Length: 276
Image: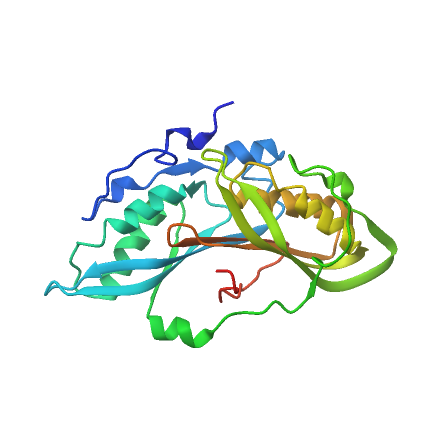
């Protein structure tokens, strides 16, 4: 079956366009991947957001002087479309030689264009370098499972059957792993990330979580769908009172993508991790 991104610029040679071109944005319907997971727009068991950070945002002032900044984009998890990442990058590049009166004018234009592509309101922040630098690098407040000794036999597809829990013991904890890796479904290039699981419910066996995370290593899917699959698998196993699953992915082409899925309203900490 052809992936919805096959018609996008991903994996193809693309002309570098340096003047404003919103038509470069390529939306991909979420519904196809939701259907694979047994979901529809009306039955999503989570809420959340995809946080994108652009470290190569630039435009010209009215006098022709270049400006550099960092862009932060919040795309609702329930929006009809994701935006294919290469098209997003090409769109941002198209601002490089375009003149704007102010940073707020740039924000307004991006908010309009990205919301149209996503099919839902997209939040946009244009941030100064000093502001972002002052926040530093975030450290996850939880337990890292990466040093546990596990035997790994399969890397080709996610294996939820590896997950185990202790129904006799309830916990409120945060587990995380830096060993999340999957591959782009179109180009096959690796996507590296840190997975974080915050939950209240039966105690999840940490070693089984690690083995499960590693089983994604050769799996081909976009960042958003990987996190949604993990959320659903953990929800089925734990039936938790509270569950939040998110991944902080390493940037590629100046963009990092950070999907958050939760059973409750969350205010994500968007400070970058050390590999970002």
